[in-house]
Image 1: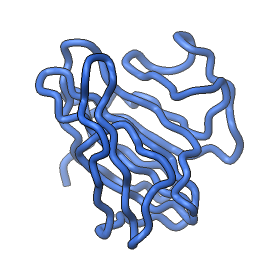
Image 2: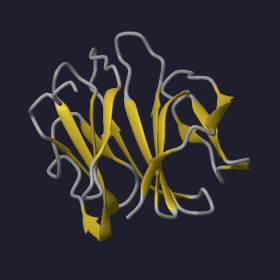
Image 3: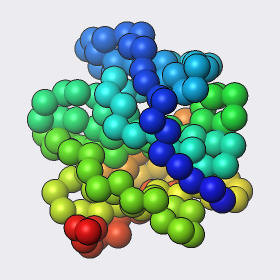
Length: 157
């Protein structure tokens, strides 16, 4: 599957964070706008994977920033979402690396590396039992995304 970072992506903020509600934004890619607002206000990266897009957004909340990863289809409709974050913990999105086998690796917390990939079919995710600490899945039990800690820092090149 062909992968490329989209430099023509940006955001239009829809709602500011208030109480327990996160700030949301529409994502704009190649002159088209997402079908619904997505959690996050800072665009960290947008990667095209064939006809789909992985959009990495953060909240811009000091000391508790979360990373929201959204999978969008060719019409920019959300297919899946996963959030990486924890209370009183902040992250810094860095070292995005597109892998030849189709996944992407990046760092967010400390020196811990993470790998995200799009599955060929949806997989059952049981809340609180499926996945690494700090990972929370969007609505539903079946998901297209796989997000795992790979525990080693991505080497600098």
